[in-house]
Amino acid sequence: MHPLITLEEHYVSDDVLKLRSADGTDPYRRFPPKVTQQLLDLDRQRLQDMDAGAVSLQVISHGPGSFSPSLCRASNDRLAAATRMHPTRLAGWAMLPMSDPEVAADELARCVKDLGFPGALIDNHLEGRFYDDPSFWPVFARAEQLDVPLYIHPTFAPPTLAKHYQGNFADSASWFMSCASWGWHSETALHVLRLFAAGVFDRYPKLKLIIGHMGEMLPFQLDRIVKQTQGGWGEAGKHQRGLRDVWNQNIWVTTSGMFSLAPLACLLRVSPLEKILYSVDYPFSSNETGKTFIEEVARSGLVTDEQLEMICYKNTEHLLGIKALK
Image (cartoon, rainbow, N blue to C red; front, top):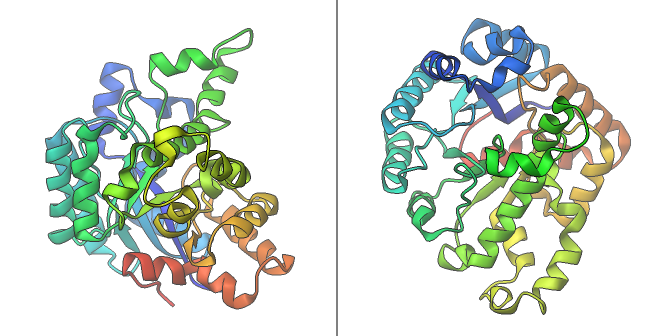
């Protein structure tokens, strides 16, 4: 089996968990206690779980939430210490205080230059505010300057968005529709389109963005959306580069949390192969499930063995400048 690099893999710092438990905003209370234990661990348990799923290297990110610059800095330092303990097995995404974009840009630079992180993972929105707002663009400018990617990851809906998912059904159904069943993915897809419409990719033509979950629904809709941007989006469609070019040149997509062949087949039809990256979404998905999926892909005939090798680790090595343990 090919080495596997995964890059939508999560942890939570003790300080953040205590803070969220104290103010009643702990989103992990809905998950089994084992998940919280896995999120907190950056050592033996995590490595054992990686070995169980044949994962050579994990790129780890902190769980979602808007936190102070000092708390982000402390969490990044904690993650960096773990990567120094296991340099061949763990790497880290920076956690950024997006409520203060200038400070967030500086923290990104510190994490890349001083801690050796290959980029940052940022929440899909800040309490309902998307990053097409120019006040957030210093982070995009710094990422382009540093030549590192930003991973845009779903986050929990604030009250203003959560109402959209409430109705004549159980609260549990509402919650899941607002996150992993639908909202996380549709809202991240919307965010990418908002960034395009706002001209972010013209302003920062070398910006590198990663999105997960087989493209957050966009691959299925991409051809239709591209045609509409060419005539029906008004000034928002009259950019220097079209949406198709942006998708092919600026967007990388991981397989995180999606373990079936149909969405992969769709993604392969609309994305350059070198832009497709394997991931798991640990611990919300298991590394063993990911391994089984890769074995299924190998048997399916969707890709050649050389192409599968690119998805498993080579594309990520090239993008992030890291190396899989072989």
